[in-house]
Image (cartoon, rainbow, N blue to C red; front, side, top):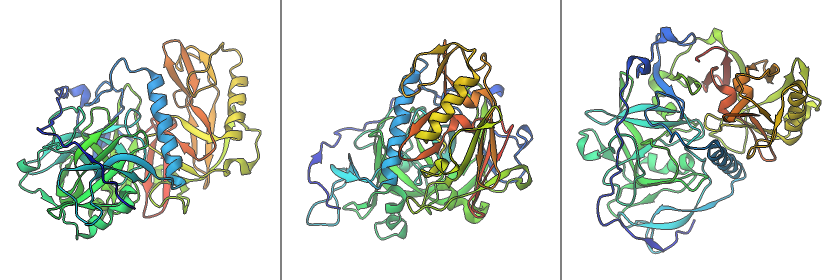
Length: 463
């Protein structure tokens, strides 16, 4: 891929984010996960508290006045980026450190516009947790994303730009265990599969990563290694991106934790000591959940196999086999469910279904709720009702997957409140890929057993 020569203006002074103090953690907002508080956690493994982006205890809350229409716009960008990623359609983002046409090295702290591979939109729909980094360890608020591989966070001196984050920006010079990664290291070569973009090399032989996302957000910086601390456990030589140009919609998080199927993801780097599995419970906006890495209680879950796909090696594909409304299957053929590849994703808010399946679901739900006054369509949601999800009588809806796993959706998983007077069906049609979003996953324990190539579901994981 030929790099463009247009240099961007390098910041003349340090651009540190103006931090808003992280809200105090009280007993009601504990930063520690106790296995006894969650029915599907065992005493081993590594457990982290997971926060809804609008949750009362979120250490990097979204603006209180952020309209839900903005969430949906951002969600649509994420879906579009996933579709482009599956289609392997390149995009252009001003996110790469400059490379001259006559050399394989680049001037330090310089930028250009280059064609980059499609990533996944990150931000207002993603759940957050805390990660410690460095020696001594400092804590940072991080987005958790099953659709991304490389973990990265903002680093001083932020030679180009850092977005506003909760808490201070990570300072590599303050960590005695920090080291940059050379261009000849195998991990530098692994960046292409982890970020879907080629690595570059600085004049000082430091490996440069470039991670672009579907909503024009991006992070560019130096591949680094340091000691990572998760809960009470620490691991040296953790590879991650030290971002020097970070722009876009990342909320007020410091960066991102990647959990996709890739050797540079957090999951794969921790696997030698903890195993190739992780689980989570995505809470509602009124509570907290968890992210657990390592062993789990296998007898508590109903499983569906991970489906193989040549479209993308790192995403988690499964097979949706049926949907029932009030006990009745939708009026579509069984082949309609498999007409598109299906991904399960932690960062997509609204589940996408093949167009025919969605139309049948919309009609069936509307018929079952015929006593509830209808409301006008809202953004991408066209099946809406007057009232709130907690107040209307919603039908029982179940989603079935290959292998027999079933998600029995409560009203909060079926409908989403878009304003104080309107609730809508939390599904939308798609012509490119079906995606099981986080509204439908809320309060379920979901385990990704990569070693055994299966995903499990268990109801009542959190509130």
